[in-house]
Length: 285
Image (tube, rainbow, N blue to C red; front, side, top):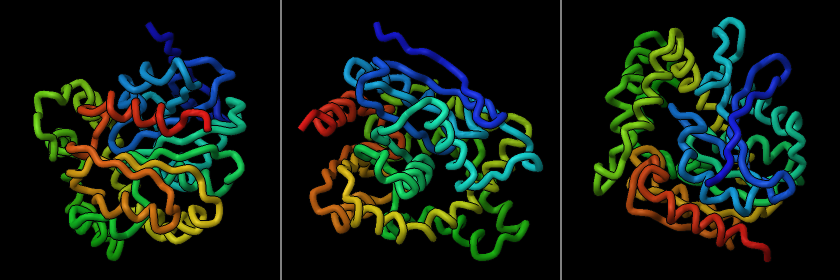
């Protein structure tokens, strides 16, 4: 049995929930979740890594069990979310760590890495994009909202925060849907039903344009800092295409790129394979 602690940290007055396991003096791995999930997406991965790593998995502000301040009291942008998670690593005394980034966790993690390249020991990107060729046509309605942030275009993407869309995100591209537990998407949907949660998520969809604008900066970081990087990708992802994984090798030629026959939430079906890949990739050199 793995001893996992469920904690909260005060980050400048904001309560941030996080899961923690493993010896504090072991190499640290910070797990950053995506939309519309929370650290519970790592519930099966953490026990497979905790014997070797000090694992920390926070819920981003506005997600999961972390505080979800009203929109008028908190600026729901990726830069501000990064500020909070960056500060959390300082509050927890995480001086140097590897990152596992997924979906929304990728731009947050990459922003942290560009701020503090000396603190990042390695990056595992699981369907965490940093290249325009990785964006599928599924982003077209969101990109239309970026170009014209009208009420009509906001309403046009509201379907992305509906329960059936969450289930589709989990199951699309999965050869055997019976391997996808309903616990994950059920909990995500419960979080999305909280008062104001849908509007927060629509704000973040609009602000996602700032992540794409930062792709050149992320890529410059990859070229100049050359972090150890592994991209492990559900190849049937409807949002982030395999080309986005292959593109890492353009800036980090020795990047380790691996594909799995599954969809966006690859941990739901391939947690053992991903855990093995992480252990191999982060093995002492």
